Structures are given as C-alpha cells and as structure tokens.
Image 1 (cartoon, rainbow, N blue to C red):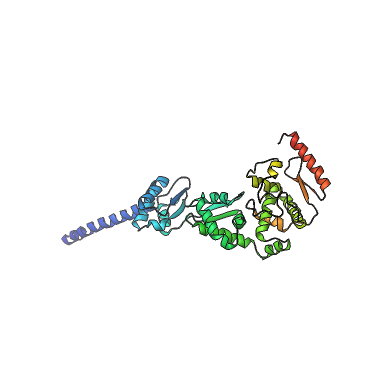
Image 2 (image 1 turned 45 degrees about the vertical axis):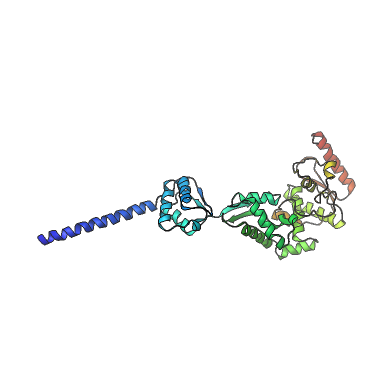
Length: 340
C-alpha cells in the first residue's frame, strides 16, 4: 500500500506538467488561429521599416489578429527586410497565416489599370498611386530604358498599351517600365509588323496615327474609316488637318470649336501647319485603335466633318465640294447652339 502511494506521488507532478503543456499548446493554437474580422486591409511595409513600425501597422489595421500575427512573426525570427512589400488581409484570415506570409515575403500583387491616358506623365501618376515610389521615379526609368529601345522622348507613349497589369508594390520602376515595354513588344508580333509595313508605317507611327483616330471619334465602328481617310491623305502628301492634334498643340483638350487662333499655333503637333504625322502619339492608344489602323478598309474619302446632330459621328467625303456642304451644316449648328 505504501509503494502504491509513492507511485501516485510521482504521477501527480507528471500529470501537472502534461496538463501545463497541453494548456500551453491549446493557448498557442487559439492564439495562432485568431481571425481578422472586418473589411479587407492592405498592409504596407516600406523598405526602411523596423519591427516597431510593423507592429503598429498590423495592430492599427487588424486589431488583435494583427497583434497575434506580429507576435508569431517576431518569435519566428521575422526580419523587416524580408517582410518588405504589400499584403492584402481579408476577412477570416488567421494570425498564423498572416505572420507566415510576412516571414516568407508572400506579397499580394497590386492591380494597375491603364486606360484613357494621354501623356506619360499621366501614366506615371496612375501607376505610382499603386506603387512604393512616385511618378518622377517612373519618368526617370522611362528616360533610362526607352531611348535604348529606340524611342525618342515624343514617342514614349507608343511604348505602352492600355490594359490591366499586376505588379508587386515594391517592384522597381525600371522593372515596371521593362514589363510594360515587353507587353507592347509582344503585341507587335510579326503579323502586325507586316501590316504596318504594308501601309508604309512602322509601329511607332501606327500608334501615333491610332492616337489621332481614337481622339477623333468615339464611334468604334468609325475608327477604321477614319484611319483609312488619314492614310489616304498621307499617301497624297496632304496635311492631316486633324483637330485633335491642334487641341494637343494648344494644350486644351476641352476646346469644342477650332478657330483661326488655334490653327495658327506653332507646334510640330499642329497638323494644319505641318505635313505628315506629328512627332509622337497624342495619347496612349488602345490596342483596338491600333488594329483599326492596321486593318483599315479601302475607300476614297479624304475629308471628314463632325455630323451636325452632335452624335459624335462624322460625314465623309471624297471631294471638296461635298465636304464644304457637310462643314457648312456643322458650322450652322455650332452657331445655333452658341458654341464659339
């Protein structure tokens, strides 16, 4: 009986130890599976972040789940340099998984949509809103990379294409410019380059013409017709006399009525004063606008004028007399509406 009591005495502390271990494991498990509950939050960890700023960011945006994630990251030997980046945390994400992503640098790509962009400066600002750096860094990267790829400064807009892209927040501006340029170069496959050659243009000049076509009409089905009209004028050695280039030269794209003072502006972009295409695109043209130029159907129009119904569409003409009548109706409607 004595021996049995001694045995129980040894088992008692052992059971206490096991109980404590189980309790610690249970606590750690509950601690690790703590969920973030709320709207999706981006956690940005800049290149110069320290452990304190990471903790503050996690706790401020994620509450107790962020506190737990930080603790798990820290006890696992988390390094701020490895965590550098952007992470999207969604409702229901557990502290363990958040901390593990920071440990491994498993960022969430940011999505950047490029559309309706006229200048490289506008492009830089659009992209920079989603990146760690600012627009000037993007401009500098363009100046570093694009000349070596054969682009003059005025031709820089031709190096890019509207689309939705994914980048890591901390990607370098040089890598972003290179990625965008690669995408553009892949678009310009052998077939498109052959089509460009057939109409006497290179890819940059096609993009330049496409930018004018895109500004000229909102009607998608009119784009190929407008493109061929300008190709006809180029072939004849006529000035393009494209109103969008005048607006670009003046620096006021809101102009509703082009007048003599606008046409007189000295600029290489003013196609009422200069023969041929302007030095570069007046916007970053859509892929569909580029294809509208490459696939423009044959016709003999060399004149166009906005329709007097202000539908955004155009009347086309192959002779000047018909064009004058079309233009007269449009001017009369401008006067009637008091547009000066």
